[in-house]
Length: 339
Image (cartoon, rainbow, N blue to C red; front, top):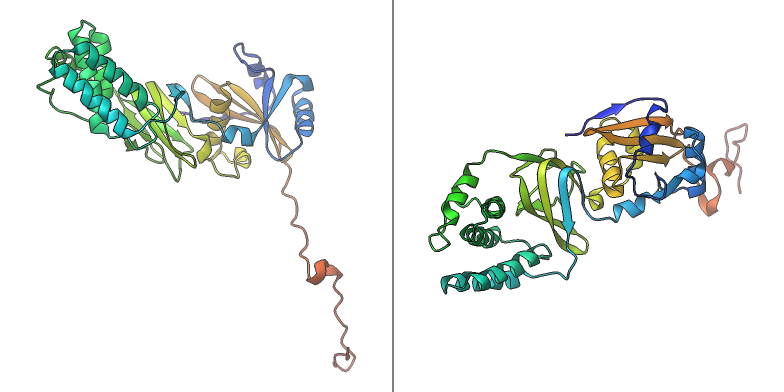
C-alpha cells in the first residue's frame, strides 16, 4: 500500500505546516541523545526556530498501543479485561431469551457480550462470537434496520464462515445474510513491522508476515499478544490499511532510515504512533523528514548521518589498554631475559 520516494533538499519542509497537526510543535523523534542536541541539529538542518520542535523519544513511541494507517480505525478497550466464560454466558442467555420470545432481553445480553468482546483477555472462540453477531443481525433485520443488520452479519461472517442461516434465529435475517455472503469486496490489511515474532490476530486468524490479510469491510476483532498478556480491541476497516504494532519493533530502528529496503516500517511506526502526516528524526548525527501524502510514504535525508565511530581499543589485564602493555624485548642471541 505504501511505497517510499526519496528526495533531497528542504522543499518538503512546507508539509510540516499542514493544518490539523494537534501537537504543541513539530514532532522530532530521537533515541539515546540529548534533546537539546537534536533540537539544535534540526534547527540547523531546516532553518526553523528551535522553539518549533517537540522532541519525542523513540522509547515513548514503542510503549504505545497498536495504531493504524490508511482507511482503518482501532478502538482500544477502556474497561476491565473480560473472560471467555462470561461472554459465553451472555451468548447462551441471549439465545434462550430469543427462544422464549423475549427479543429485548436477548438484545441486552448480546450488547453486554459484544461490548465485553472488545476487552477479551483470552483467545476468542470465533464460532461462538459469530453466533452472537448473527443473532443480533437477525434481531435488527426483524426490527426493520436492514443496514445495521448487514453490518452485524459481515462481522459474523468474518469471525466464522457460516454457510447456512440458523433455523432457530429470526427468519427476517436470512435474506440479509444471503446478501452479505454474496458480497465480493475485500480490502487488504498489512502489518508493520512486516516480520514479527508474535503476530496479532484478526477475527481469530493470525496475520501473515510479509503479506496482506484480505478482510470484509466493517468491524473486526483485533487481538495482540504482549508481555502483559493478550489485549483485544475493535478494528474498523473500510479500505487498504496498515496495522502498526509498536511493541513488535526491535532495535536498531532509526538506523534503518538509511536503508531504502527497511525504512517503510520505521516511517509507519513514526506517523501512526504520533498521528501526524510528517515528522523529523534526528539520529547518529543525521536528520530526516518522514511524511505521508496521498498514501505514499516519503523519506528525505536532510543531514547525512555520521560514520560509525571506531570501536574502542581492547583492554588487557588490570584494565590496561592493549597498546600500553610492553612485551619484553628478545636478547641478541634470541634468549628471553629472566624476570
